[in-house]
Image 1 (cartoon, rainbow, N blue to C red):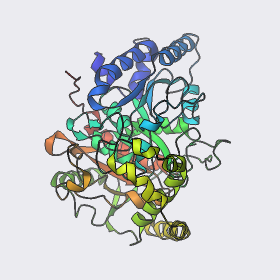
Image 2: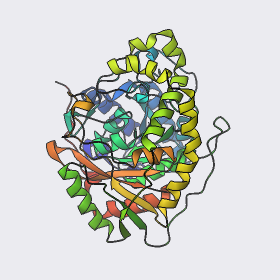
Image 3: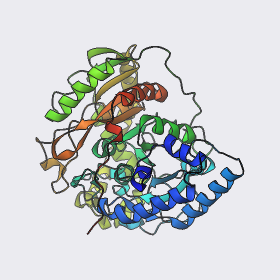
Length: 466
C-alpha cells in the first residue's frame, strides 16, 4: 500500500496489516504525525500535535503485539480528539484564547478507555471556541482560524467539531472524537464527507470534557465508515463513577429488515443536489429496508427549548469567564458579547424549557411508532463558504433540517454518512435518527448502505499550504 492508501484505510484494513506485520503501530503513528504537521495547517484542523506521547504509546502497542497480547480492534491505531477533552501532556484549550495555556494532569475517561484499548493519541484537534456556546455567526470562531473542509478549502468544515471532521476527511487520523450539544458531530461529518455517530445521551462518559450543557452534551466518533464508528463507540461506552449520567446499556441488534420512516418535508428547503442525492439514497435503502414516506414529528418548539437550555447552562458553565470580562478575548465578535446575552436568560425560561422537555420526549417517542429509524438529509446544504457570515449565506445555503434539535433535546442517537456530492465538489450527507441506545441498529442500516455505495471511500485531494 502507498502512504495515501494507509492514510485513508479503515480500521479493519489497518488491523489486518498490523496482524501480518506489514506495518507497525510506530509506522502508522509516524505517518499520522507527519500528515498532521504537513496538512493540518491547511485546514486549521490541529491545535497540538503530541509526538512524544504518541510514540511512547505506539511502541508499547507494538511490544504487546509481539508478545501476543492484543487489546482489541483499536490496538495500535492512531487517533485524535477534539480539544475539549483533557489529555495529559498537552494543553486543553477549548478552542478559546482565554484558555490557550490551560492544562490538566489527567486523561478524560474517553481518552483513558481508548488508551486501554491500545489506541494511540496523536493530536488535540481544533474546535469552535467554547463549542459554539456563545452563538457564533461565522466560521472564524477559534484562535486556530476557520475550519476548512478538505474537499474545498474555501468552505467550512462545520462546527463545533471542526478539526475532528477535517482531520478524518484529510487522512490525518483514522478516527477522531468529537462532541455534540446541538449538531456538532453531524454538521462536520456532513461538511467533510465522513461518518459521524452521535450517541444516546448517557451512553458515553463526559468526565474530563469541557461542559457546555450538562443535560445535552454528548461525545462520539467521526470515522471512515459506520463500522468504524460503531467499533470506536463500543470501546468508549459505559458507566463511569466520575460521570453519574453515564450508564451501561446493551447494544441491541436487528433480526429483521429495518423499518425506516422518511421525515416529512425533509427536502422542502434543501439545495438541489441534497434533494437529488437523498432521493437516490432512498432507492438504495429500499433494497433492504421497509420505507414509509411522510412521517411527521410533533410540531413542538424543540429549537426554542434547546436554545434556552444552551444559553442558560452555557452561561453557568462559563460564568467566571463572563463575569471576569475575559470573554472579550474570544475570536468571534459575536462570542465576545454572546456570553452576556446568555447570562441574561431568565430562570423561568430555563425552568419552563426543562419542565416541558419530558412531554416533548414522550410526544417524540409516540411519533417514532414502530420505526427503527427516521431518515432525512443531515443538513439541507453543502458546506458553507468561510467568507460569509452564516446569516448572510441564505437563501442559497438554506436552514437546518428539523431532526437536529429534537434529536438532541430527546437525547436520541443519530448516525450520518456521505451520500454524494454537490456544487463546488462538496459532499452531502444523510442521517438516521434512532430510539435511545439503538446505535447498533442504526449501524446495521448504514453498513448495508455503505456496502452498496462508495461515497465513504472517496478521497479529497489533500494539499499543504504553500
